[in-house]
Length: 391
Image 1 (cartoon, rainbow, N blue to C red):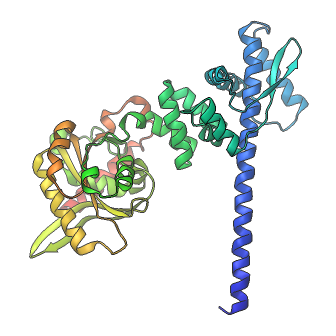
Image 2: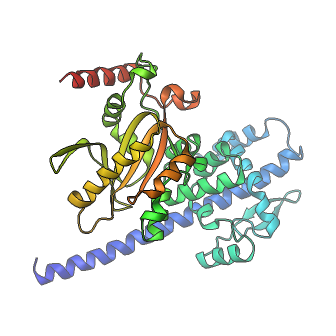
Image 3: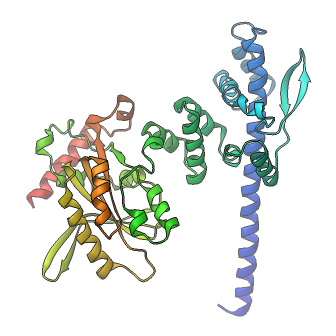
């Protein structure tokens, strides 16, 4: 590339970055404006419906009339107007701290009922609000996620702390509404940061240790594995069948474990000093900059599993780790575990590792079963895995 082309490319990169940053800011402001509008309409509708100022069917009638007077208007179905009312009612406690989420000023309409005319705060004003009135409330995240995300959180997470957690989750991972709902149904709040591990003792940088701790849960729902539907009993299912199902559904597996995972292989072979070692599942995580070993165990946790995992991590660290990578992490994934005991035992191991459990589809709640593939697909996976076992 000649000097002139380099100059042009640099100019394009600078302008492109400015455009993308501007677009991101515009989207952010539009989202805040929408939240302000919906919060204000919710406040207005709540005041009139809860105080019986309006008769039955008023919301439906208002929605229909809005559609007539504003053709092409979207987002103002009767259901969504009720969602706006819910949005306001669930978060109106914020006003008790003299800090409505949009620092809204109210314009009087009709019989002293109010609709907001919102003043969107700057980032600096948001920080001041948090410091002055709501030091623990994530106002930035509140204003960053969409109204649809908010409604999903309000519908499925009832406790205040859970709502705050999922609000931060949606903002941090830029999750779709569907992924957010799955995280809530899978009860990520109660499983995040709970996996027994020795990361703080084995990862020198405590920030990296905490990042690794946040990456894994103590229990996973492998909802693409349905032992009962496959016509098998628990004692007949070995790790190879479960592993094969995971390999055939590796995208779902990665989505279950979170962002940044890249699949490296299953039954990955290493020869060390004439001894064969076969790693069940090997991944690389870009966020952690580490390889991650998953060892599958269809049964209760046993102490010797940690010794096996420790050997794999030692071999990976000596023979496969690249200069820019962090030390590999290993996770034992088993059906059941005394997690306090597992956490106690693993403290003497020098490689970073953890122990998590998993459930399969036949153990899941009916609501989660909706996410399963058809029975025929599960049968196909089983048949294919059986053929491979015979090869």
